[in-house]
Length: 263
Image (tube, rainbow, N blue to C red; front, side):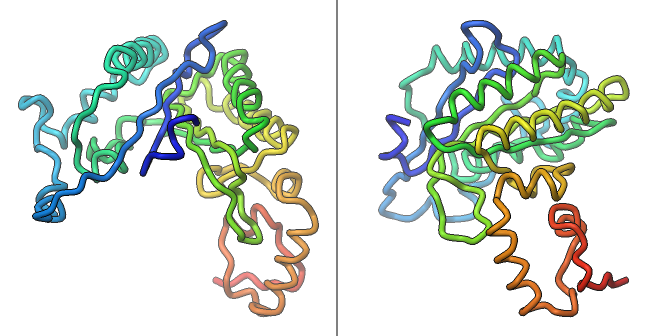
C-alpha cells in the first residue's frame, strides 16, 4: 500500500500454499504509463503478444502444457517458484505491453481449458483497510485447514464508490481460485460457504460476478437491509413487470412476489 498511491496501476499476488510465518507472503507489481512521443505504442500491433513462449512453445497450445500441472504438488512448487522469482527481481524495471499487464490471464490463450475437466470456482472478497490483513489471512488459513488450497490468489487496493449496491470499500480485495475435482467438489462447496460466512463476519463484501453460490441471506448480511430495501423500491418503480432479471439477480435477491419470470 505504501507504493500504490503513486502508481498508475498495481496488482498483488499471494502464495496460496505458504503456511506458518510465511502465510500471506506475496508480491506487488506496479505499473506506470510510458510517455512515447511518436505514439507508436498506440498501434494495435504494439499490444500483440509473441506467438511463441521463449520462441519455442506455441502460445495457443500453452494450456496443454499447463493442464497436467494443475495438481497440489505441482502448484505448490509453482507458487514457491513465483515468490522466489519475484523476490530476486524486486525493484527491477521492465517494459511490457498494456495488454500483457492488464490481462495476464489472457497471456495464455484458452487458459480456462487448463482447469478442465472440473473447472474452477472463485471467490473475491472485499474488506476495509483496517480489517483486511487479518480477514484475508483467515480466508487462507481456513482453506489450508480444509486441505483445499487456492491455486491463484490476487489482491488489489480499492477506493469506495458512490453506488447504492457498491461492494468496494476503502480497502483491499482478495480473489481466490480453486480447482474443482471429483474428489474435492463437495468439500469445496462446504469450504466456500464457510468462507462467505467469514467474510460477512469481518464486515466484508463480495464481487457477485465471481461468486456462483452466494445466496440472498448471505448477500443481505454484507450489504445490509436498508440498501436492499432502497434497491427493491427502485426495482418496483422502474421495472414493475420484472423484465430485467437474471439467474444471478434471483439468487442474491430472491424472487419478489411482484416479479414475473419470463421464458
